[in-house]
Length: 109
Image (cartoon, rainbow, N blue to C red):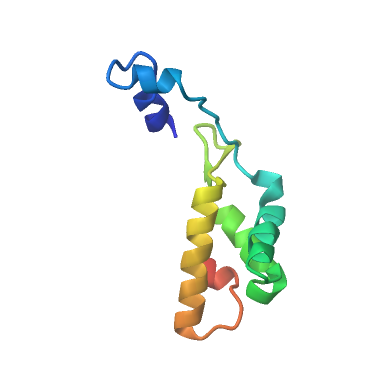
């Protein structure tokens, strides 16, 4: 999050002493690890990925959290853990609300 990096800059006199005591770590997008991340998160809750969503849902999550970059050939990935988790929670809630047994691409879209 570029905004957070700006706020946590050592140049910002209001937070300089705190920032000097912290280590800022930049998380990269999940990209090719999306399915493994979802599997890990759901296994911690005692579920299998296939219990909750089908393969089309994983592809739809990837598509929904990827945007064309400034050059049309480049895609900008927004597949950060927080964004993925928020989208998955919203999709699971919508699936439950409309009575769909598994999250699928239509639910994610």
